[in-house]
Image (cartoon, chains in turn brown, green, purple):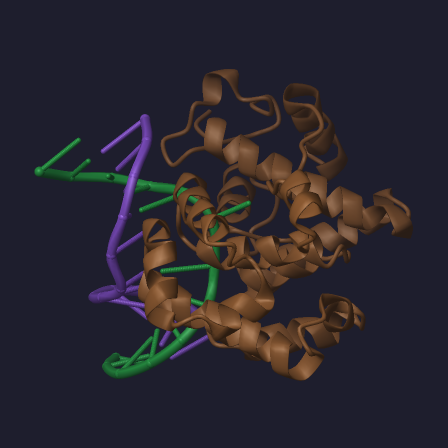
Length: 231
DNA sequence: GTCCAGGGCCGTT
DNA sequence: AACGGCCATGGA
């Protein structure tokens, strides 16, 4: 078994199937004539070092008050926002972060996400990173999953799996990101990359949640023949 | 009761 | 540049 990315990807897809990511209820947004991309932006911030099950509770609270909207959040009392997102933890800083990004999009882009996303990835990324509370992973999640632009998201899971297999010994965010983008760009056509980056990251999250945990379950891991960890 | 989760900021070295 | 403390909730 070769431990190249394509082989790993195929093994993950065979086990988990095609994953539908980012987890967002597009029916809800069709009904309410709201923008699903904003739910992804909110989710990306709320899920910082937090279990997704807790983020879901916060999103339900926001929806129950019909607040899942850029204008509404940017206007809402921060005290009220803290209450709504409380289940997701770190609610003081996250409320502040949500206010900051919604106000930014509201002011600079008149709350229009098409205008916000419609430019070069590098410019978009730098602008996101300028905002307090938006680091590389949150920025890249927003660009890939809300903006539908090709950028590979690296998270703690990606780093853990890369170290265990091992794929490479690089540990910085940008090093790992560059490695994946370089390798996957060789394997797939340019217009497929957004979909591949999206799906690959989703597979990595699944793998890490179900098998490559902190205390790993290597026995039934879909890529245990490729991985060198604990052998 | 203990551990952990789809990070990021800030102060210290 | 790298590291540690901190932020908080809820499920396993």
